[in-house]
Image (tube, rainbow, N blue to C red; front, side):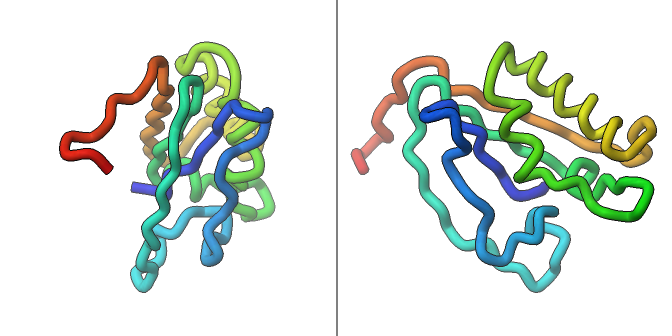
Length: 122
């Protein structure tokens, strides 16, 4: 699975930037990559995108990889999650100039209410 990104709504900006070793494709494609632990506090309206390499390894006609961190956040911020994912898929098709030729899985999670405290407290 690809690296999780965040397209939070607060302040109209993504909540998290790229990891220091992130080249825009996530880190799962590198066998030597060891993801560092990152913790974020999520609030109502925040969204998290989980994706596979079908998204991060999509290429344009010149061979450049789809820049997930730069392009996904603005597309995923507003509207229903289903519509946001449709916008993302359409953007990938425009970027690559063709229909997807690799399988991809996209999961957009949105916090819709207050989060309960974890059992045992943290």
